[in-house]
Amino acid sequence: MSYTSGLRHFGERPVPVKCPKCAHIANQRAAKLRKNTLLKCPHCGLEFLPSQCPRIGG
Image 1: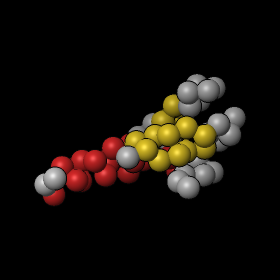
Image 2: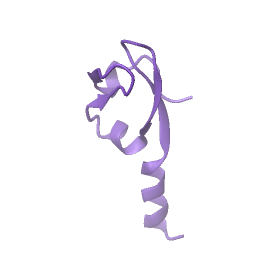
Image 3: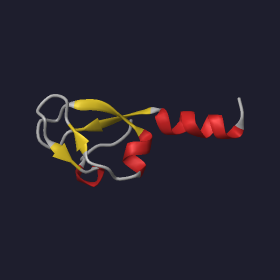
Image 4: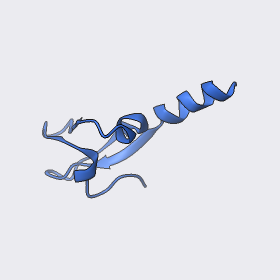
């Protein structure tokens, strides 16, 4: 595995994120969290930013 290939896989790893509204925990890509993009809860449909999450990670 090359260095750049390893970095790509690092960004694709799943990170558990807790929804601020319904407290549902869903996996999001680490790259989306780093870029601070809008996330959508698969349970209730709420759209939120990673900075609004009460729990990110383990």
